[in-house]
Length: 99
Image 1: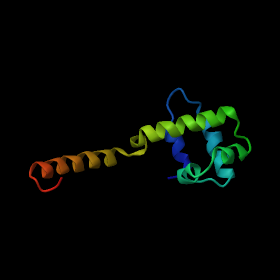
Image 2 (image 1 turned 135 degrees about the horizontal axis):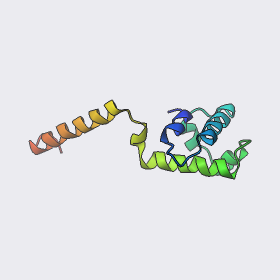
Image 3 (image 1 turned 60 degrees about the vertical axis):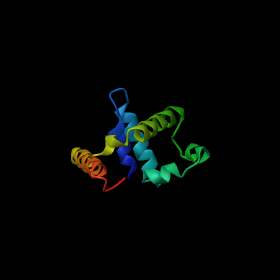
């Protein structure tokens, strides 16, 4: 999942310009995925030029929002599909076919 998805978890209180700058800074630093970000230490993050306290706090807020609500990145079809699958699983449990 690309770092561009950080923009998808923004809400009305977030500064979209700062989010765009943060994504651009990460891209310029060669960090393209959320997985790469998660593998970084706090010191690694501080080594990225142009990420100060304000952008770092924004970054952590966006990552926390993403980890708390991963469905923010899901499309409407994916959400419907998961709900349908859960209904099927529940029915199979009722029938004793799965646990």
